[in-house]
Length: 460
Figure 1 (tube, rainbow, N blue to C red):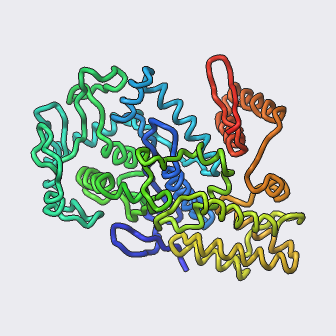
Figure 2: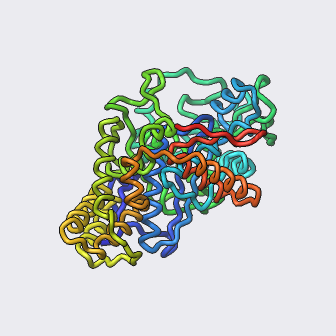
Figure 3: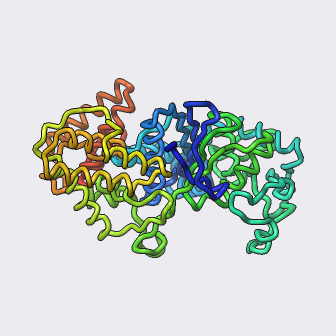
């Protein structure tokens, strides 16, 4: 069976047929980087990391673009609150994001563009939309998209313009011709810091959020690519607006398949700071190891709603320990996967069916049961290899089990050695190596804090 993916646009599961045979081009909307990543971010990042890994394991060459939004109203407000430059804030938060995601085993994408690096491409796309009558200059200095000028608006979300207009609850902003119109270029305000203002033929300002992704995807993947992903909360209006912009400018749909991960709730309630149920990744890693958190997220299908709770995390930790226990004490060789093996075949069939991780993990437990009965090194090697395709079971079983499945505590001398090695890697401009060391420490419950005078650490 070929790999099949649920397409939000067509509302059906369909075969993946890359535009360029053997090469999948994938864009995923990343994070607006004004604060530490929370568990909702982890849900999205782990889901699309899983997709990225399986595409590669399936033999595809993958060009994976995951952007960083580093200019936005929230970023400006946070920088002003902290009285630091925007670039300093975003640099700090990007470093923290890389450490969090590294701890969770999330692979770096092929390209990780920052919005501020692609303003010329955004302005060029806005110019094309203006030339086609799909963008107009408003009286307040903004440039807006004319939603009613694009005949296909609403096709991703399934909403008609009349339905959307009926649901409009906010007053028309100054200069908008229609409440549904959205901003492509925001005119600068006097009170905003200088590093929030970019020059353009429209005057000083900054890009709207939606145009950022359209321009970066087009610049790095072309006018048409295979897969566009993001959280279900982005389906409308962000992805709907991306389609309107990209198709409006280029005359063709940007992505063949649109994939959305299910949203996260905490104890069956939407996560919210006001409700006191808001958790950063670092909050969770103070109590649970990173591999348990990753396993916990992958045992739910990526499109399903996801319920985050301590009880579910505890259950996930017990389950992961069962898999490690099956490997404990065995000298497991490194092998290539024999896909004719019954459990390997079941694993592959599940993953090819819209990345059905619950089915794939069920195959891992079947293998573990067989290993417990027979002690087969072949099955143990297969279990470790298949687990690796999902991003777990790569620790030494004895180390994981002795740590209690996640209560890891490193000796201070080991921490000091790792900090020294990280400093040496940074001095040699091996930033990937430095990020990996920081991620390893975070996964072990050690949080690093860099400052002009050096690096300090605390136990999470």
